[in-house]
Amino acid sequence: MIEPRFVNIKTVETPGKGKLSFFEGIHDIPFEIKRVYYITGVPQNMERGAHAHHELDQLLICPNGEIEITLDNGQERADVILSSPDKGLLVEKMIWHDMKWLKKESILLVVASDYYDENDYIRSYDEFISICKMENKE
Ligand code: T46
Image (tube, rainbow, N blue to C red; front, side, top):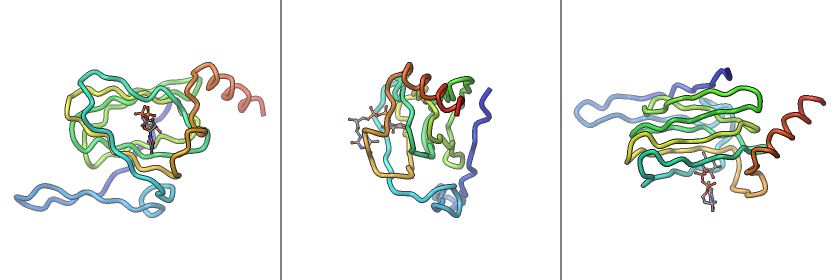
C-alpha cells in the first residue's frame, strides 16, 4: 500500500471564536506555492479527479466536511479520509488521484506548486500506467 504523506497544519484556537490554521510554502510544505484553488458545492457521493499530473505537486486539505482521496502510484493504492483543518495530504507528481465527497458542503482546498496547465494532466488511466512502466524501466 502507498504510505500517504501528511502535513500537520498549525492550528490555533481563538477561544469562543473558532480556529485559525496556517502554513507557508517551503517552510511548512515541500514546495513554493504558485496557485490556490478550492472546490465547493459538490453533491454528496460525487467523485472528481481521475487524473495524475506529470510535474505538479499539491497539498489537499478538507477544512470543512469529509472527503475520501484515493491515491494510486501505478502499483499500489491507498484511501485517505480528509476531514480536518489541521491535516493536509501531499499529492505529488505521477500519483493518480480520485476524490469522493462523503458529506455535502465539504470543501476541498488545494495549494499547488505551479500555475494551471492542462498539458500537465494525464486523464487516461492507460496512459498513466504506460508512463509508470516506462519510468520504472529507466
Ligand atoms: C487536481 C484535483 C485535486 C482551471 O481553469 N484552473 C485551475 O486552476 C483548475 C484547478 C481547474 N481549472 C478548470 C479546468 C476544468 O475545465 O476547471 C475545470 C474543472 O477541473 P477538473 O475537472 O480538473 O477538476 P477536478 O476536481 O477533477 O480536479 C481538480 C484539479 O483540476 C486537479 O489538478 O489535482 O482537483
